[in-house]
Length: 510
Image 1 (cartoon, rainbow, N blue to C red):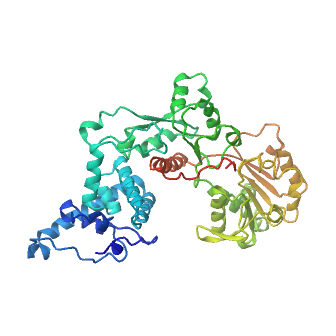
Image 2 (cartoon, rainbow, N blue to C red; image 1 turned 180 degrees about the vertical axis):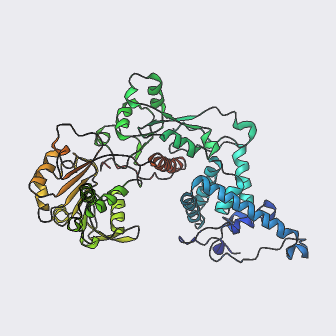
Image 3 (tube, helix red, strand yellow; image 1 turned 135 degrees about the vertical axis):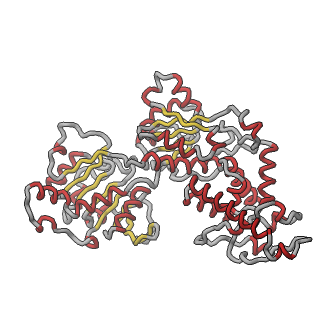
């Protein structure tokens, strides 16, 4: 096999398999000459490599060649590898396994020594996560001899600290021998400042799939309101390198921090008070990718007049004319803010058949773009165009100084032609209560759905307004698991020096 053939880049659509890994079950089956690493950089099954004959081993019998006892051994090896892959997939999830495979394959396709070192570092991180040799070989196809060398080096001396910065107190992975694992008494306590039910349990359960990391990391629930009077909680936050929490709680906790390097929020948005605070010497990430479906469901419910159907049924009235609705292709949904939430809403709304327009500050001159391969969205930076042509307006703008009271005053008069429904995901920042009520009185808006995080004052006219629907911001039952998934994926990125997902740009405020 020549070097080029062994180092072909992986096709992004090609799913990695365990067949090639299974043929390399023991170090006795691999060539141990000096050029081993250059030839067997990674024993993946890649296009062009299948069917390459292996060098015949000296003294191999005819029975072995014809598949005697060796055939039974190979079958056992393949079964072991398949079971190992199944275990890893169950622990990490199929999406995460594919992500690891593709990342490793991209490193494998390069010749540079630095990329080789990165590949080795990636294997060491998987070791630290508690994966066995056969599990790593199963998902990556790494040669047995190379794995043995890395495991031996790992056991001989602690590997360099694998945190995002040199100052992180997360201890280096202990030598992988039973006699020394229990001797490591250092641990990292991550404060969790959140009102999401069962979040600490969800985090602990997901981390328990990786015994070596779980033995050194624990999650501790902390009440941010008690930090000023609770010395133990204050000391925990002060010593923390990593904090997970709700945005409002994190604002209260930040003055108590001394070593913070990464703050993971439980929400997809950033609190304006968090952006306004002066301390910014740490990475901040959002819980992106887990919000948005209820918006598309709400639009469908309004368009089909489900609330009217309930009212008619209560009075035993049968009136088809009250329940007429438009074709989805004739309904335009304007999404203010085309970030993580806005793009997710756009994808779901477009999939339901509605036309989608999106307002985005930084946009290319071409007005049409695709998101995850779903349709074309009219993306523009012209607020007047969006408001004048919308049947529904979804406010998904982040809370920043640039968006504060963007729709206040008489701006909504631009909606007078179509009188859309306003669905506000962050009430009272972009538009205030008085503006919403006035816009409906002038028939600039036909109705409003306000997703409020806190109760509206009892004296508010919104309670009795016939065109207003108030919905409390209710978390879905799986939110704890969803937030834990985002955090765990970023934790592996943090440990492995990789860029964090959904990072906040302090200068932009989101």
